Image (cartoon, rainbow, N blue to C red; front, side, top):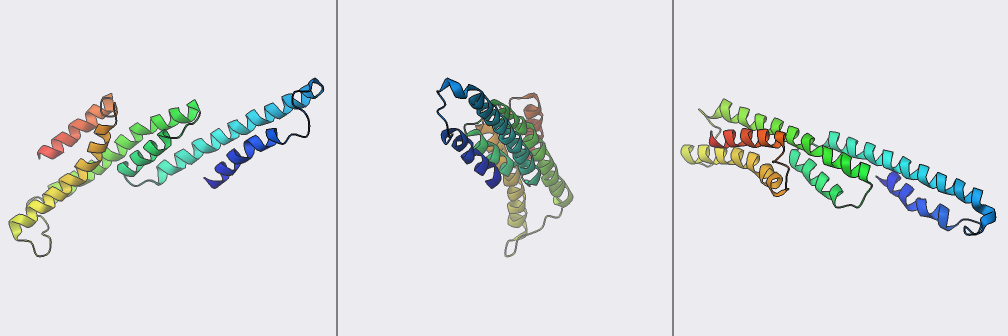
Length: 170
């Protein structure tokens, strides 16, 4: 991130501190070269940003963390191609959530007949608390997704929502 930020900060300096009058027609070729260099640098920054976004998503461990990262990136004014890449991450988030939901469901199905009881809990209350905690683990991210307009309304979002509802009813 720091390398990209440094490139962004240096970007206008090259134009602002040019040793010639940019409005003087004698320097038209020099100005054209400086502008081409500027545009090349912008493209380089854009590519590095895309790589940074891709790497950030590969390191995330939870759908909720990924969703928060996308929301943070969304609030930053950026180029259209970067916005498009960020928007494409929503399906990745839903895929991550699906795998998390399947893991929670597997834990529930494997232990529902003999649930682990929290320390100092009576058996029935402990079983209820355990099931409630699993339910909350699945519910918290889906509520955040629901607050994002359109995320769960996509075709894949509908599938994820049905999987969640099936789990929640079990």
